[in-house]
Amino acid sequence: MEEKPYLTPKQERVLNFIRKRVRERLPPTIREIGEELGFKSTGTVRDYLKVLMQKGLVRRMNNKSRAIELTERASFKIPIIGTIMAGKPNLAYEEIQGYVDADDLFLGRLGFDDVFALRVKGDSMIDAGILDGDVAIIKKRPNADNNDIVAALLDNNEVTLKRLRSKSGKFHLEAANANYPPIFEEFKVIGKLITVIRKY
Amino acid sequence: MEEKPYLTPKQERVLNFIRKRVRERLPPTIREIGEELGFKSTGTVRDYLKVLMQKGLVRRMNNKSRAIELTERASFKIPIIGTIMAGKPNLAYEEIQGYVDADDLFLGRLGFDDVFALRVKGDSMIDAGILDGDVAIIKKRPNADNNDIVAALLDNNEVTLKRLRSKSGKFHLEAANANYPPIFEEFKVIGKLITVIRKY
DNA sequence: TGACAAGCCACACATTTGTGTGGTATACAT
DNA sequence: ATGTATACCACACAAATGTGTGGCTTGTCA
Image (cartoon, rainbow over all chains, first blue to last red):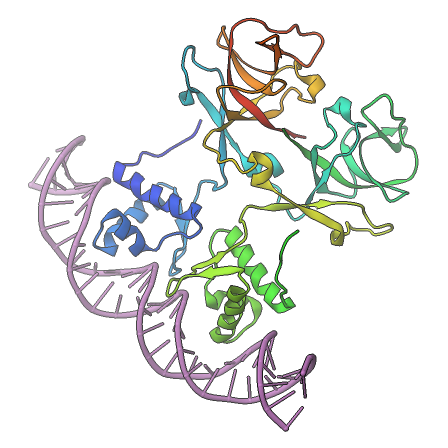
């Protein structure tokens, strides 16, 4: 599934140090790497960086201090566990099926300039699994497709989360709850639902 | 709610540029800031950095390149919009009620060492608003309280997401779907549901 | 009329940092 | 034997980067 180039233990140590520093905010300088790993020559570190570059693990910019970039995504990852081994007292981390990338899960590669959140009030979308108190992540858009769940601005200046329906060329809004009638009045789509998050 | 020191527009621009660069991986050098903001002297930039430090917004290390650190939490934030102004074509960002902190929303301040994710299969928790395909973020724990939703390991080595119930001192598992009977067989709690995420 | 802060600039200098050349040694495969 | 990869070092040099001093305006507040 994932292509990981072979790394010698030493090379791995260098890469791990870079990872650590990047996580902690500031990529290291060549001399900082050398100091940490016990190299007395900057040339040695450069040799390591060269192989890491050749193996596609890091990118660099010329003549720029600390300009070491990891090619792997930086945002934190949560393991997805599949089946669990019998009898084991702990989770079998060997069984990790993959990782959820947090940023990805949230925004799916969108920037977050055009993204905002609404806290859901009421139970009008309960049959769509959207409950009171959930956080709805909305991608700003002036339009949407049939059956999309959208945030819409009503005439009374309320924002509501509803499913967009088209019937014979005209759009209206539908709740996901039989107790709420469809909305045929004027409205304006302000965005499309891309993610729902609920905390317990 | 939040103590934000007063910043002049110019100071804000400098801070925003630093934020941007930090997000994009590498804090800027003094000269990079000057270039972006149109300052011809490094001294000017240092003046700005000095006030930003005095106002507690950034930290610096002496004689270290790019060693500008933001004091604010780094993880990205999504604005929560409240009511929307009438007639405005765009979202009224002045109406932002606050920000969702992504990391926070996910994990609620927990580290992510003891956290993993399960992709939900089936509709057994549909009445709790947990649908097929949702991602369940689980905090590893060997036990939980009555009414908590838990990930549990069954005797047949399957992992399932159910609500934990105690009846006269004994625990069993309940689906949130009338079509599924409660589970009284042997099981082991492996973690507690803390977040549900659904992507559209 | 100060005094003071915000906003700028020029320029010299010190330090940090990256680049590059030329080595040495070991191990392994052809 | 020759080549190639790994794994180091010393050292000189260039470029980037941070520091510091001394200015100069424009406003505002007392």
